[in-house]
Image (cartoon, rainbow, N blue to C red; front, side):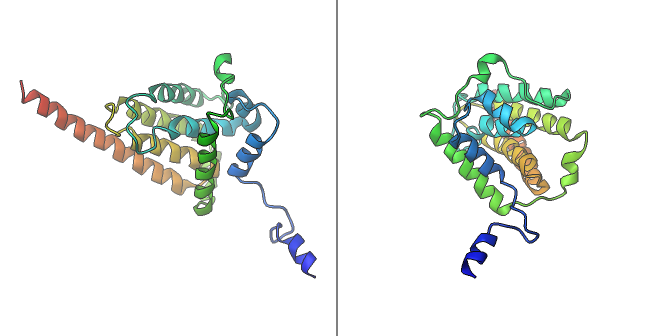
Length: 215
């Protein structure tokens, strides 16, 4: 009887094995023997790879640390990929050089492990909400436009101020909302992004006024 209960524990109420989560799929890909490059990720995850790459690119500037402009390249790449969504591409196109970027090398293991753990924590509190919004024809272009706006805002943040954190965090949460089909994450991402943009404008205006008063 005990054996029967143990076997059924991994099944849902109608006897089907639960679908793997995004973090499970990503962990399986990193632990597997396949191609662990950016191109390999695109080949395995298909349309999902847009959101995954945005999380990879903007995860670092989303940390509450002043980056000194070191992440500007990531933000530029995010804008270029978001433009692909806006024009209607369903799969990521990358130059051959970028496709060969290693994601599971010794230097990347700490970051990718942290990324998977972060996604796993979000999955624990997230659930599908208003999934139909992610199935609309305009969902990808709108997603792309929002990523462009937030990436540009992060790019324009003055170095060493940490003001790129909120726009980048907003883009990461939006990307996670697409991966998990949870509109609550999208709302949180928009709130963080808008707060970051407003903060940049307010502090930037104050700084300009302060400098002008000196001359």
